[in-house]
Length: 92
Image (tube, rainbow, N blue to C red):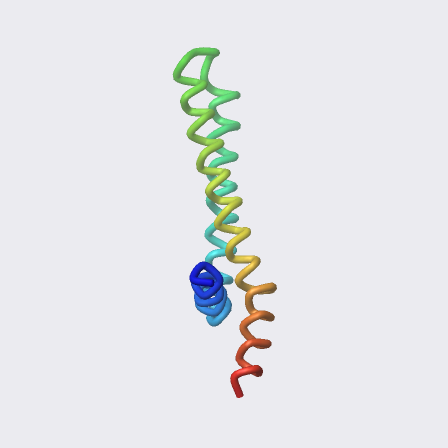
């Protein structure tokens, strides 16, 4: 019951502001591109070494964070926004 209320509050909070959701979507996309560029640079510029692998791992980490952030923004813009509108109409 308690976790259900927490999820409901989180969904209402995330779905209430589409401007922030769009900003998250753009930020996540930029993080993904930046991480991908780091990954490509480590492959093309550096010779095969330990530092290349560490830089590639860093790029993959940044790109993964970007994908997660973009997903959060997308869900906030679409699914959670619909959930917010339905629950807001139920309260009236």
